[in-house]
Amino acid sequence: MVTGGAGFIGSTLVDRLLAEGHEVDVVDDLSSGSLTNLAEARAIGGRALSFHQLDVRVPETTALIVRRRPAVIFHLAAQIDVPASVTDPVADADVNILGSLRVLEGARAAGTDRVVYAASGSTLYGEPDPADLPIRESHPYRPVSPYGVSKKAVIDYLVAYRELHALEFSALALGNVYGPRQPPRAEAGVVAVFAHALVTGGPVTVFGDGEQTRDYVYVDDVVDALARAATRGGGLVCNVGTGTETSVNVLLRTMSALAGVDPEIRQAPVRQGELRRSVLDPTRASIHLGWRSWTTLEVGSALVVEEAKRRAGVASAPR
Image (cartoon, rainbow, N blue to C red; front, top):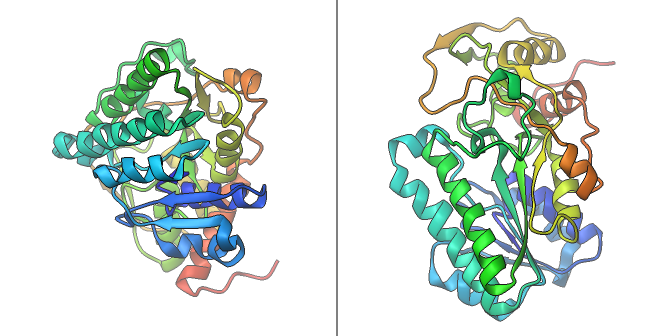
């Protein structure tokens, strides 16, 4: 079962699971995900794919899990907007904490073997000392946004359910995930936002001075880590990132060159709750999941730019 399975990460994971021969239940309320993302899965999945339009917060989600009895639940459904969590922390907690509890209660009652949880490596550790970068999982959890707090709380619940109910888990602290299906909305990810602006000729908004950094990790690499976590890394939090720190300004220069444009840049104030620097040490994932990131930012962002061109009906330059 994949919650949030119509989102850009979730749908890519669904494609992978179906290709491996698994039967997959997708749970998504389509508030941010899209059935378009599942077009390929629905075309090839046949009876192996079942879609359930449900909000993870409702009791029916727990009942569905009990009825379907999934061996593994990949829990990706979430409220992902950091500034929105600052504005309305109650709504953030409602989705990210209470919704997760609905899933865990279903997993417990259904006898699910494992829950694989998509945590947030870019918010979990808070604002670390530069000397601690790239950050390891042993670093204290000190989130500075309600979104980060809610993701941390779910890890605490996973640990408790493991101790109380023998419900195994693997939690992956994801870097800044990007890829072709990512929607170009402000909360969704800067790579998709930049790509859309660059190919449509719109202005590019840079928050703050653009020197803030992130660990950008390609969606296919992340899906590989998620799939591996179904049978590995039990009881652990593993960072899933590249270990490479990239500033927003460097990202914009890279993508502008790929798109072949010199964009108008608009400056905006730093958004509340966002970190200055973030980069993850993926050593534990290498040891326990046998995983590493293989897609470079140049290759991955080029694929995002090409997808943005296709969506916008812009012809690609001949190579």
